[in-house]
Image (cartoon, rainbow, N blue to C red; front, side, top):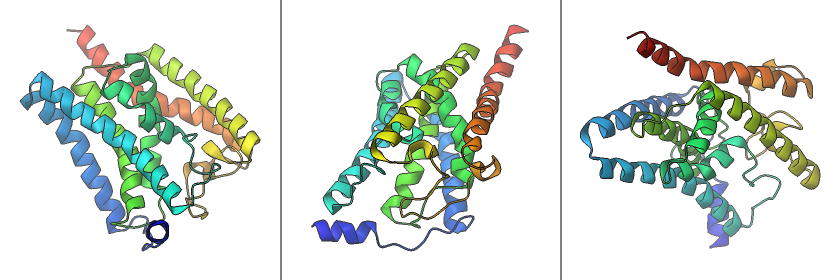
Length: 248
């Protein structure tokens, strides 16, 4: 069994960035992100709405657990590569706190973490394997599934971030950065891309926004300002909606 799982995880057609499988994944994800929350809000009763929300939360959570489990079975689990010390992985693991238990504190932080990273994940996905490999679906469920959950919580659960939420999310981001740095020093890893710019899970360099933010270590400081801009952009629709309501 170990050899079978190992062969499967490491045998695939390469992912073609900006190819059909990339474009279609973004189109399908966008349609689901728009349609499902609106349908749930308008057509489902409260109990069913919460059931759908729980399914989304546990699906995204399980996506990471299944991946790590398969790596363990294959004998390829690596403490320097597979821990939840990347922001998206950690967000996936705590997502059930929002979708199942409806924690507003976790929601207001994940709102900014998720939406600030959405564009980069959509344009420059960290994928080596093409459709229909497990790694292909793992990436899109882990990233776009998080966005779906946040939109669902905003539309259906009627949660809303505030400007104070933005500040909390930025502080939380820097706490996570500090924890990741300590983990990297302890086990000689490169979580959160602190020690060098991103590579995919088979060790290949991938193009990302960090390529335009200067050399190491300056891109880390530059990324702080970019994160603040992203957080502001994520909050702007909420700000204008609130401002419009206050004028009524």
